[in-house]
Image (cartoon, rainbow, N blue to C red; front, side, top):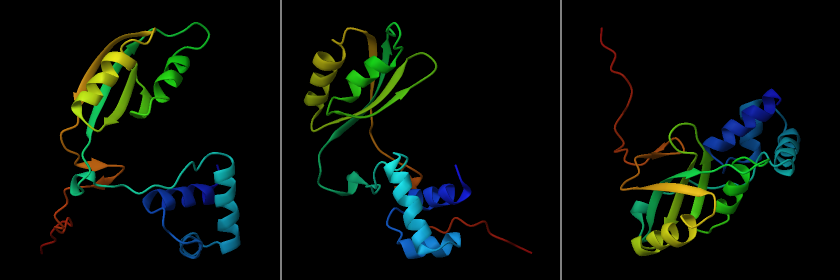
Length: 163
Protein backbone atom coordinates (compact mmCIF):
# COMPACT_ATOMS: atom_id res chain seq x y z
CA UNK A 1 0.00 0.00 0.00
CA UNK A 2 1.34 3.41 -0.92
CA UNK A 3 2.54 5.91 1.67
CA UNK A 4 -0.19 8.45 0.79
CA UNK A 5 -2.90 5.82 1.20
CA UNK A 6 -1.56 4.89 4.62
CA UNK A 7 -1.36 8.55 5.67
CA UNK A 8 -4.96 9.13 4.63
CA UNK A 9 -6.15 5.97 6.39
CA UNK A 10 -4.47 7.02 9.63
CA UNK A 11 -5.95 10.51 9.42
CA UNK A 12 -9.46 9.19 8.76
CA UNK A 13 -9.14 6.67 11.56
CA UNK A 14 -8.35 9.49 13.98
CA UNK A 15 -11.15 11.75 12.69
CA UNK A 16 -13.45 10.56 9.91
CA UNK A 17 -14.95 14.06 9.63
CA UNK A 18 -11.78 15.62 8.20
CA UNK A 19 -12.48 17.54 5.02
CA UNK A 20 -10.67 16.75 1.78
CA UNK A 21 -9.03 20.16 2.05
CA UNK A 22 -7.57 19.43 5.50
CA UNK A 23 -6.36 15.99 4.45
CA UNK A 24 -4.71 17.51 1.37
CA UNK A 25 -2.88 20.08 3.49
CA UNK A 26 -1.85 17.50 6.09
CA UNK A 27 -0.47 15.11 3.44
CA UNK A 28 0.96 17.72 1.09
CA UNK A 29 -1.30 16.54 -1.74
CA UNK A 30 -3.96 18.11 -3.90
CA UNK A 31 -7.66 17.86 -3.08
CA UNK A 32 -8.20 15.94 -6.31
CA UNK A 33 -5.51 13.39 -5.43
CA UNK A 34 -6.95 12.88 -1.94
CA UNK A 35 -10.46 12.46 -3.36
CA UNK A 36 -9.22 9.88 -5.87
CA UNK A 37 -7.30 7.91 -3.23
CA UNK A 38 -10.32 7.85 -0.88
CA UNK A 39 -12.64 6.77 -3.70
CA UNK A 40 -10.24 3.93 -4.57
CA UNK A 41 -10.02 2.84 -0.92
CA UNK A 42 -13.82 2.79 -0.69
CA UNK A 43 -14.26 0.97 -4.00
CA UNK A 44 -11.73 -1.75 -3.10
CA UNK A 45 -13.27 -2.34 0.35
CA UNK A 46 -10.39 -0.99 2.42
CA UNK A 47 -12.66 1.73 3.83
CA UNK A 48 -15.93 0.04 4.73
CA UNK A 49 -17.72 2.72 6.73
CA UNK A 50 -17.25 6.01 8.53
CA UNK A 51 -18.43 5.86 12.14
CA UNK A 52 -18.00 7.92 15.30
CA UNK A 53 -16.92 6.47 18.65
CA UNK A 54 -19.89 6.99 20.97
CA UNK A 55 -19.90 6.89 24.76
CA UNK A 56 -23.31 5.26 25.22
CA UNK A 57 -23.00 5.56 29.00
CA UNK A 58 -23.70 9.28 28.63
CA UNK A 59 -27.01 8.65 26.87
CA UNK A 60 -30.38 7.26 27.93
CA UNK A 61 -29.94 4.19 25.74
CA UNK A 62 -30.35 0.96 27.71
CA UNK A 63 -28.35 -2.00 26.51
CA UNK A 64 -26.31 -4.95 27.68
CA UNK A 65 -22.95 -5.80 26.14
CA UNK A 66 -20.94 -8.97 26.56
CA UNK A 67 -17.81 -10.62 25.27
CA UNK A 68 -18.40 -14.27 24.54
CA UNK A 69 -15.61 -16.80 24.17
CA UNK A 70 -16.72 -19.54 21.78
CA UNK A 71 -15.10 -22.92 21.26
CA UNK A 72 -15.96 -24.52 17.93
CA UNK A 73 -15.08 -27.54 15.83
CA UNK A 74 -13.61 -26.33 12.55
CA UNK A 75 -15.29 -27.68 9.41
CA UNK A 76 -13.46 -29.71 6.82
CA UNK A 77 -12.11 -27.56 3.96
CA UNK A 78 -13.57 -24.39 5.54
CA UNK A 79 -11.86 -24.21 8.92
CA UNK A 80 -13.39 -21.60 11.19
CA UNK A 81 -14.72 -19.38 8.39
CA UNK A 82 -18.03 -21.18 7.83
CA UNK A 83 -19.08 -21.13 11.49
CA UNK A 84 -17.87 -17.53 11.86
CA UNK A 85 -20.09 -16.55 8.89
CA UNK A 86 -23.12 -18.17 10.54
CA UNK A 87 -22.42 -16.40 13.81
CA UNK A 88 -21.75 -12.90 12.46
CA UNK A 89 -25.10 -12.85 10.67
CA UNK A 90 -26.99 -12.64 13.99
CA UNK A 91 -28.17 -9.08 14.73
CA UNK A 92 -26.92 -9.31 18.31
CA UNK A 93 -23.33 -9.92 17.17
CA UNK A 94 -21.36 -6.69 16.67
CA UNK A 95 -17.85 -8.14 16.19
CA UNK A 96 -16.27 -11.57 15.65
CA UNK A 97 -12.57 -12.37 16.00
CA UNK A 98 -10.64 -15.61 15.40
CA UNK A 99 -8.38 -16.04 18.41
CA UNK A 100 -5.45 -18.13 19.52
CA UNK A 101 -5.46 -19.76 22.93
CA UNK A 102 -8.15 -21.47 25.00
CA UNK A 103 -11.07 -20.58 22.73
CA UNK A 104 -11.52 -20.08 19.01
CA UNK A 105 -13.82 -17.09 18.46
CA UNK A 106 -14.40 -13.95 20.49
CA UNK A 107 -17.73 -12.22 19.99
CA UNK A 108 -18.85 -8.77 21.05
CA UNK A 109 -22.62 -8.99 21.41
CA UNK A 110 -25.29 -6.49 22.36
CA UNK A 111 -28.94 -6.71 23.41
CA UNK A 112 -31.55 -4.46 25.00
CA UNK A 113 -31.84 -6.54 28.16
CA UNK A 114 -30.00 -9.26 30.03
CA UNK A 115 -32.90 -11.60 29.26
CA UNK A 116 -32.54 -10.99 25.49
CA UNK A 117 -28.80 -11.60 25.67
CA UNK A 118 -29.28 -14.82 27.66
CA UNK A 119 -31.89 -15.94 25.11
CA UNK A 120 -29.41 -15.31 22.27
CA UNK A 121 -26.68 -17.39 23.96
CA UNK A 122 -28.94 -20.26 25.00
CA UNK A 123 -31.13 -20.63 21.90
CA UNK A 124 -29.18 -19.23 18.97
CA UNK A 125 -25.46 -19.47 19.69
CA UNK A 126 -25.06 -22.55 21.88
CA UNK A 127 -27.31 -24.65 19.69
CA UNK A 128 -25.23 -24.20 16.52
CA UNK A 129 -23.91 -27.52 15.28
CA UNK A 130 -20.17 -26.80 15.55
CA UNK A 131 -20.23 -24.76 18.78
CA UNK A 132 -18.80 -26.87 21.60
CA UNK A 133 -18.79 -24.32 24.42
CA UNK A 134 -19.19 -20.68 25.39
CA UNK A 135 -18.13 -18.39 28.24
CA UNK A 136 -19.94 -15.07 28.59
CA UNK A 137 -18.33 -11.99 30.17
CA UNK A 138 -20.53 -8.92 30.65
CA UNK A 139 -19.13 -5.47 29.93
CA UNK A 140 -19.64 -3.39 33.07
CA UNK A 141 -17.93 -0.18 31.96
CA UNK A 142 -15.87 1.04 29.01
CA UNK A 143 -12.73 3.00 29.75
CA UNK A 144 -11.27 3.18 26.25
CA UNK A 145 -12.47 2.13 22.80
CA UNK A 146 -10.81 2.53 19.41
CA UNK A 147 -8.07 4.61 21.02
CA UNK A 148 -10.53 7.05 22.63
CA UNK A 149 -10.48 7.40 26.43
CA UNK A 150 -14.03 7.71 27.79
CA UNK A 151 -13.41 8.61 31.41
CA UNK A 152 -10.91 11.41 30.74
CA UNK A 153 -11.46 14.29 33.13
CA UNK A 154 -9.54 16.75 30.99
CA UNK A 155 -6.38 16.74 33.08
CA UNK A 156 -3.16 17.77 31.39
CA UNK A 157 -1.27 14.49 30.69
CA UNK A 158 2.05 16.13 29.82
CA UNK A 159 5.04 15.36 31.98
CA UNK A 160 6.16 18.14 34.29
CA UNK A 161 9.54 19.56 33.33
CA UNK A 162 11.63 20.91 36.17
CA UNK A 163 15.04 22.48 36.20
